Length: 147
DNA sequence: GCCAACGTTGGC
DNA sequence: GCCAACGTTGGC
Image 1: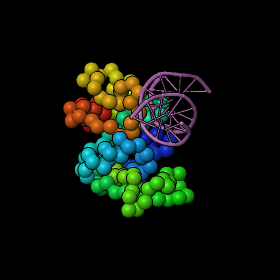
Image 2 (image 1 turned 60 degrees about the vertical axis):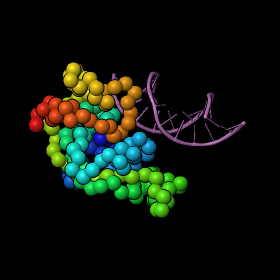
Image 3 (image 1 turned 90 degrees about the horizontal axis):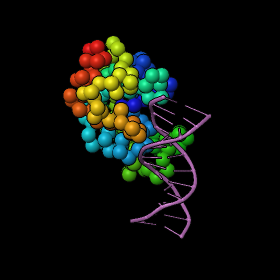
Image 4 (image 1 turned 120 degrees about the vertical axis):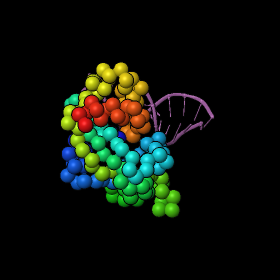
């Protein structure tokens, strides 16, 4: 899961212990949260728009998908006038902090590793904020992170 | 249903 | 700040 550290960093998640992953307004990412993610699932926390960009640590899905409350808040930036409580359009999961990697893994290092050539985040034009990761890739990344 | 215009993401 | 690569919107 990607986040801009200026907006919400892994250190902030560490401090707050958990957070509602609201504000996702992309249908593919929504479907992924709604249909694929289950409590207990492991999450790689990626810092985008950072210097350098890369994977900062681990988190975990701690609560099942619920309708994203921010879509109903008419004064908030994530308000969606087309959504209603009966017919919510957007969903979100709760993400809990697990741990920071001992070594931050930069996008550059991810690219250099031949075994991660299929990792979606290193592919050109791949902007989706929530992306699936294969078990093999996940395990290797944890090792690279020093866990 | 097409597609041009526009908006966003995110690396550089 | 630039811009490539998408995704969304809305007129037709």
